[in-house]
Image (cartoon, rainbow, N blue to C red; front, side, top):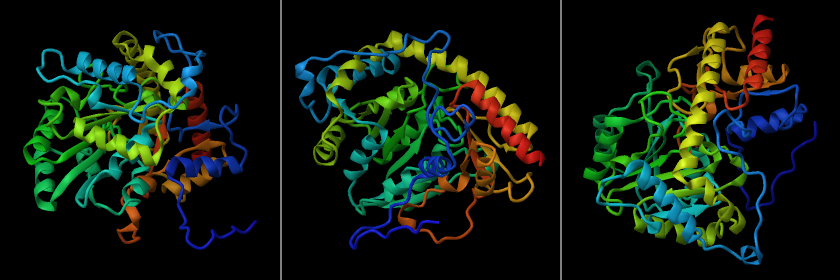
Length: 416
């Protein structure tokens, strides 16, 4: 095996986050996107082709000489207007306080939006939940201007966390901000309705910023509403400490466009835009212009309905298939497109996430070990056995054919 060449003095080793790690390992064995023999159940993106009832997919666009120029760091004013209008139409009809372009910043993808945001946090305690999105680990440990505080969610309680518990964490641990994905990646837990409203109320009363990654908000299977957002429960868009991140990646199924937005109080947006001026320089001008038609409510709602119809069927197939394999899903996903599988019933070494991942590669199936979601910024917690070693994340983001191929490959592996 070829030995790794050490980095020059002054550079630290930066680990790959969960999905990037498993894709890299799979690529060593011949995997590439679209390979007909592989099933990527580790996929962190949805299928991008046409769905029944979905708006026509954008396949080309034109741009003029002006769009060869830089766009504003905070985004094109027209696109910011369109994002604000969509949130007002969906969630704020009849409310006195409305979002405007000053409440919106555009960025080149969700990770950039998150990086901008956390770079503006002061020397405070920031709560994050376990398990949650793998990229939070490096993100929350890179700036050293705040202290990440882990908050453990209990699978025996189906990862529920009440507003009274949130209040206790904010007061007891001195949190000034809390960050979470909603719906949660990887568990599929959805915070909605009165429960979400009560979280926003705690944030307002205690002046604790609530940072919500809502990139999966079109993928909801409970609650009776087309989409869910904390924006519906904000009283004053400039005073309530609620910051929302979303984009075209998941909810519109255009991951390759790398276009996202941040919605929140204008003071936060101004700070995030200032951070963008030295972190990334802004989102590509042509992509922003091309995205404009996608932000109409008619198109956005049609996409959400098509997504829920198609992904609900894949969700059911994945749940049935995992149960047949002896993989327990403590909480059937209420949102998103992942099943968080408990592997403890499987024979060793398949009863750990890393063991199943390694063995499944030989069947040309990719899954993501659960330990990657045990977010541990800057490795501040001791290296001891985590609570998610016997879990894995199974994606039903790929098309149904890939899901079936992946389940069949796992079945052959477990049978042997």
